[in-house]
Image (cartoon, rainbow over all chains, first blue to last red):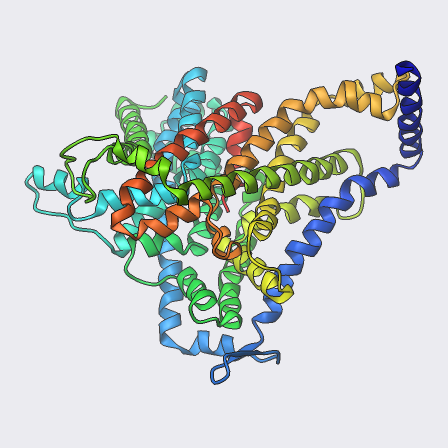
Length: 299
Length: 270
């Protein structure tokens, strides 16, 4: 009995298999249809809604969203000094974080790529990635505890007798926390780029009389530039879109905070949507420049 | 090749970077055992009482159950949609094939707040009540790419000659999938699923905009970080999550090889 049932079922499965083999387009539709539909409807749909919403506006008297196309929100963003300052501050900190991360990445990336034994290299790479899996909030919170005036950093500085270092809530703290959060994102592409440099290049540079610094400037740096740019995309984009870190360790507003407040407290979704277009536009320009620098091959 | 000085500087820098990466986590761990509610250093008295208090907290239990539900459903959806997309892109050539990877990575490549507010306005416009369903929709959207990347990478490394041999030996499409393709990609699927689960369990930037008042573990941490009274419980939950998270991530690393999961994670930050 069981055998017959299995055979009958096998027959149906086999017929379906055969049908799909003869009709590869059917197979394609079957496998790609689901994910594509999900993405087009839910994600691209949402982004389009956001884009359209950015051109609507909130009637301040009735608190109703007026479905009428206008550039009001963008005009406010451009003309109001407060928002200009916030945009510049966000971009400035994002740039500072990116540069710091790139510089901090280099020693470990170089050590893992060129000096470490294969075993050590694997251990280092895992060590770099593991902290990313600690909850994001916990990692920011850790810095809040460290940087608070009664915390371990100030305790340490006072112990050495160098006065006191009270960062607490400040742009410095935001900078440090972001540098910490995104370091692995710049480190891995830079490591990848360093690993691909053939040893013979460095030997040739040495044989031609170049010292360490000259070799770094003229051989290593140009070769790892695409890796640096690739890593910087993440550090820059993630900083632009963050609203939680400034809220926890900062004392000023960033683009993300304004958007968050406009969605939650003020209920001015059109304005929030318009402001969200700013990081998107900045990232679009950044990605175009990165593409020119060959960063996508280094990802 | 490198001079002695350069070598010492690089080794020193490496050591410093490792300290920079791990010191904050060690400090959170220590504070979880601190007796006092304050955040001053050095820690005066040590206790394990907060673990009991956290375990008995109804908020923590509710958040944990929501987080587990959401992460499980989001992972299953990501598995189905992500591996299907990986198969399609691997097996067929079609118009717009190169755009699929780009499309799938978009929720992660765009600044997190953009994805968050886009989903938020759509949920508002459609009038869907905020809750588990809306959180799952958001999470599945950015978990798909993790499974997709893992499975596609493995498919590309599996020789097509295996499939051809199976067909030559008379296996039908289903049998080939069942006995050849699936065993070859099984570990990649498991690794992708574990990473998707961990990603969903950890997410806050988008969740804040799609959850309404529904608690998840990261939302619990977020809400309570600002209440000094609850700080010790937050510390304990944070440490518990950290340790719980290491299990799936460690297994995924073992299954997929360090490089693959590292790449997945760097593309997976919301």
